[in-house]
Structures are given as C-alpha cells and as structure tokens.
Image 1 (tube, rainbow, N blue to C red):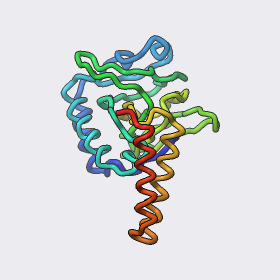
Image 2: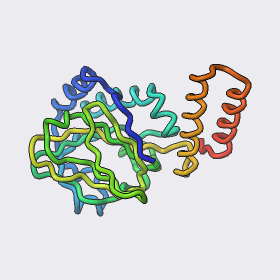
Image 3: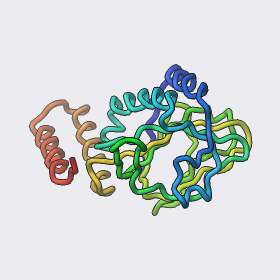
Image 4: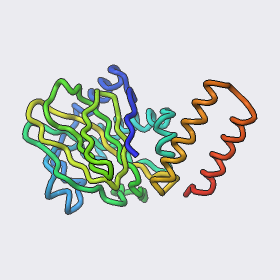
Length: 226
C-alpha cells in the first residue's frame, strides 16, 4: 500500500512545527541509523529525545490520530515518536530498507515497522531534488509533496532520497505497527472501509450498510493483533 494523506497540516500548522524544530540543534543523521543505512545516509537530524522533537512530535501524533484516512489505512496499534531530518545541498540517502523493529532508547517501547510515514515540511518550490523514491513490485514511485502532506507506505519497501541540489528539504518521519500485520489483509480492509463509507454517503443508513459494517469488524477481529 502507498497512500498520500493530503493536508495533514495547513500552512499555519506547518509554520508552527517549523517554528519549533528550526530552533533545535541538528546533528548527524546517523544517530538513528542501522549499519546498512549508515553507509548510505547523509543528512541532519534532531536528536529524538530533544525538547523540540518531542513537542513537534506530539503535534503530529495528535493530527494523525484525528485523521480518518490515516486511521483507516494504517489501523495503528503503536506509533514510533516522530523524528525530524533535513537535507541540505549535496545530501542524500541511498537505497535501504528500514529496520524491522524500532527501539526507543530509555523506554520499553518496541515498534514493529509495518508502515513508514514521511510528512513533508518544506514547500517543493524551495528545493530541487530531495525526492523520496519508493521501489515495490509495481515499480518506482517518486514522491515530492506539498508541505503539510504525508505519504504512507510499506516499511518492507526499498527506498531512497535523491540528492538535494538547491535549498533544504525538511520532513518528519516515523513508523507504525498496525493491528493488522499482513499488508494484503490491511489493504483489503482499507478498500472495504472506503466502499462502506462511499455507499453510506450515497444511500445513508440501511440494513445492508449495517451488515457490511459488521462484516468489516468481524474481519478486523479475525486478523487483529492487539
């Protein structure tokens, strides 16, 4: 599954997050890298336990928890606290796959990385390059979204960030452990939920809608890890 979540934040919301994180002290992005990623990674990152990262991350977590599209697609069980990175001119991140489990230092939190999310926090006109490129069984997907938009995709996918050749690209990224471990099952539930919502908008409440909603929740019960 690969899904664009538009306007998670409006311009005012993006400006508020940028106001928080731009005041932070950016360090080498490899502070959170695994061995493989460290060989390919060149960027800057806010320390994950910094006050700025925590404050801005809380805003993002509150926004995704309110976003019906995100909840329907991800069916989240756990969300790793959002991190923040920046790519200045010449910086890039080579092809890699995210670690299967993320550990939050100093915490018992363990998150199986079923889904990856990137929230864009820079207007695309303000930088060249810096595309997120995701490779899956359907080919290569190049992603460069408006500030405030977010992309959600399978964490099992190989991906990279192309070199920034002008300006600076700033984003937040994090991982989600879904209640539904299997990607195909999660995609089926997402399509099922969308179909129910579409029918409801067309015909309103009906016995058939109630039946379909019950079937949806019975499938969630069958497949969910809680």
